Image (cartoon, rainbow, N blue to C red; front, side, top):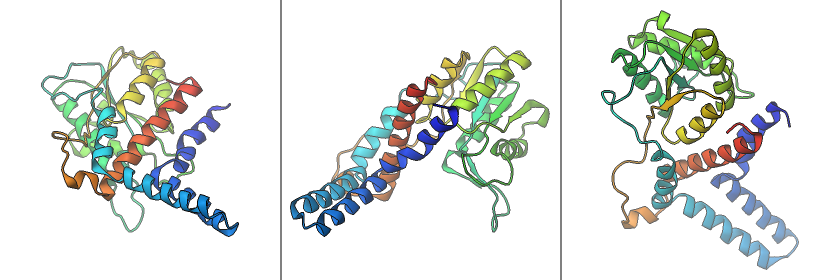
Length: 262
């Protein structure tokens, strides 16, 4: 299978097993069973749809799934961070400045950009490479890497310390493109900056590409002790988002392994 097909598989196919997509599919199946007067299967489909949506929306489920990813590479303070030749910042951190926006939109993962700026300002790295193109089939004003570079400039990182790689479309292409830069720039070590939940897949891919990277995670979303109050068993839209994010990472990891990228 070509790289483009694997990229399609990793970006598109998970939609059908995300909680909302799976719930809709089960509901649709229930209506089909009802149209053929198969009442038992119709009822089963509706019950399964409700179960999938409820379980995926429970904070206790979402927190455990997401924390399992985040806690594999715990974050460290800037002061305790090792030094390296360069910091590699991955995309998915900001939204395009489409009208009526005037500027870029800071997404939940924008911590990646701020974290990289702090690493530079604290002299943990002398350079930053931004590896961030745009998603398959996505519209854009310019590459996300260029937009992130603008933010880094506003946050005190000079342009001569920034290398832009704006062609890659996913984590695998991030690693391949960055490997080429290692060869041309003479870098031998790097701090890999991405969200904590994305770090396990990113580390597997970059190490598979033969790069000497040290995890420097940020954007931690599950904080504090795991509680077991009544509220943790009731549906919540924020929990549904966390569950979906965890499933995205697990499926992405499986697809990357199948493609030989991780």
